[in-house]
Amino acid sequence: MKTIQHWINGSPTPGTGPGTAPVFNPATGAEQARVVLGGAADVEAAVSAAASAFETWSESSLTQRTQVMFAFRQLLLEHEEELGRIISAEHGKTVDDARGEIVRGREVVEFACGLGDVLKGSFSDQVSRGVDVHDFRRPLGVVAGITPFNFPAMVPLWMHPIAIATGNTFILKPSERDPSAANFVADLYRQAGLPDGVFNVVHGGKDAVDAILTHAGIRAVSFVGSTPIAKYVHEKATSAGKRVQALGGAKNHAVVLPDADLEFAADHITAGAYGSAGERCMAVSVAVAVGDAADGLVEVLQRKAREVKVGPGDAPGTEMGPLVTKAAQERVENAVTTATAQGATVVVDGRGLKVEGHEDGFFTGPSLLDHVTTEMDAYKEELFGPVLAIVRVDTLDQAIDVINANPYGNGTALFTGSGEAARRFQRKVDVGMIGVNVPVPVPMSYYSFGGWKDSLIGDSPIHGPEGVRFYTRPKVVTTRWPQPKQQVSAGFDFPTSN
Image (cartoon, rainbow, N blue to C red; front, side, top):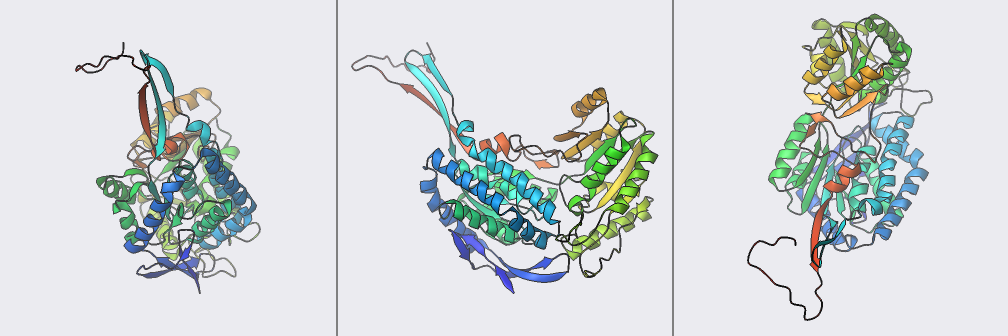
């Protein structure tokens, strides 16, 4: 049985944690590896390595950092297929979907390759007689990322390239459900020429997380996961004096107006709802059908949901793979059962799906629920599975009210041919990321990713310009260079310009 170890100071290490945990193949249900579980001692070893590496890496030139990022970016490109298959084997998503997340993560590396321009400071000449002011940004030190199972490559890539390119050293605590991608990326960094100790991986569960949140040597923590854990991370880490990015859960709505092309809208909503088996924080989980659009939309969505090809992630033609664990499969299917009991109409029922040759896999099919109300559990809970709920309203304003009353504010979309409706929608919804005829509006790397309300705890989005600001702090320097023997008067009053 393969054992997945930590990666500390440039090489794999078994660590001293409390034991190991199983890593499953979701398509077969079989245990395929064990991952070591780290504790406080393993975090301490990673912090020690990262702190030592920070002394030299933080003083490295922008040219050196950029060269490493360019080499790392090329290696991600060359090993995209291999890394995609590693992700698919542990997560269950299709290989093409896994390759897609690598591409979106690589975009942040490309942004980091251009940080020489982003990190340029400002200069003000002659703010007072003979006095100039300039500023520049400095790295924080050792920083850490705690990331979820659903994007084992992309979400960490939204963090560590910017942190490292700005001169910090990094400790990653990935999900123990699909840990191999983190070690693979660590080795790519090694091949790219990143010095030992700059990027480290500590596997584990709550013990490792708590050790990261409380360690005095870690200056900042980035987190993506559920809202309850995001609140816990934010409270515990900020109380320990750290900067925190804490991105939480979501309930993303796609609104369809009567003037929308229903085939186009349904095609994209289906992909947004069932892609990656719905295990995305930006998945479309609610379709809000406005007025006369409802019956026609449900008819097309029903047809498209039944056409989704479910199977192993590495099988040709598969569009949707299994859920990540048996517990996730049971939770999602129980949610459909509860929805039925609460009065929803099950238009497409994905429960009990068996894939030939993979009967023990964690599969469930796409489910489509109609006549869902905002009081039902299927609407209120983040199901994180292939379940799409249809909520019917009469007007666009009512649809906006539904979205704004929801505690989450991660992503939303509007399908329409009306520019006026689109402009009104994007100005009125209390949501951080909005798509117009785009179902999954994940911003490009040079914008920042983050929702509103319970989808973002605190006020720090991730990657892009906000990422640069998060991993650095400014220094402002006021200078005077008097001529030899020049008398410059000093006063006891508070200094002012003149």
